Length: 376
Image 1 (cartoon, rainbow, N blue to C red):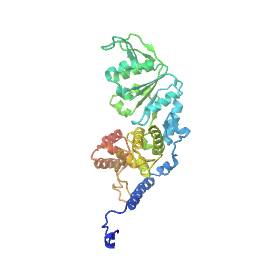
Image 2: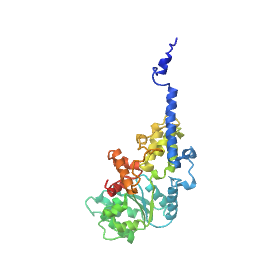
Image 3: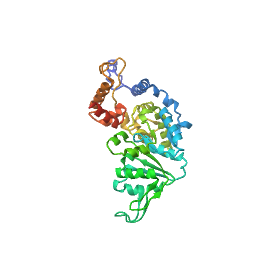
Image 4: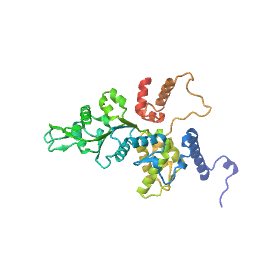
């Protein structure tokens, strides 16, 4: 027979933790509370996941060469691509790492009259300084030690096509000067050669650097900057276009589920909450990697919050609740308010600028600039 537990012991909780169904209800209520809190704090997130179909069907104006976005800022980027692609203008693409600068350059090339011509990509940050001139312009045999044969430079390989210079601010100054001359004259001269040859190249450049700072520090030639920035496209960070997160997340989920042969069809409410809340210092690339991990770990048709990277579930600075005391004097100027808030956030994260910038919703370079400006 099953022994009975006295009523007073049951009331006092002597049997131990509550029954599993009650614990589950508590966890569900907590998760739903967090989702409700998110929706109430940021009205733009309401209904975004419900409005995003399980099988992603990207609107016609929501995609350009695999770039996805329905937010106003991305729609503006798409319109700029449509306008500049058919021209011969040089283009400078700026934005944080992971925002899709190479995808924009590729979209411009594929929509241009040079689409069926060579498309050459150069990552300036990956080329050793001593070899940069040879890589870009080529060399003749015997031009320097190790030059055992003639070499065609990347500018010449891109003749009649497009050259994409990624991380252009990382180019050595001497090479910047020679590149400027080549763009202005339409001629290139190989290292060790006495004669120049004609090239017809459209140049698209990109950087994640603060170009004004690079100009001030003398790491980027001003004349080259103006030559490259005939038409400039700035890509917004993902944290500034959160309405695109559900569309992107579902797109990546479908893609990786198909690749892995798994039937993962949705995100849990709590996973949606964390995906919408996170600030994505690595932007779309970080979201893509996170969804690949999540689909790989998912044990059923639903991605849970535990399948996401741990960073997505880190505690954030609490927001002011209704009726809470405002921590700053109402007589402070906006500049004083910003400076004081930056100090508080830095103290909260023990001086970790990466975490502080993420919590503030700005890039680390912007945080450093404000710290210098306010002498924090």
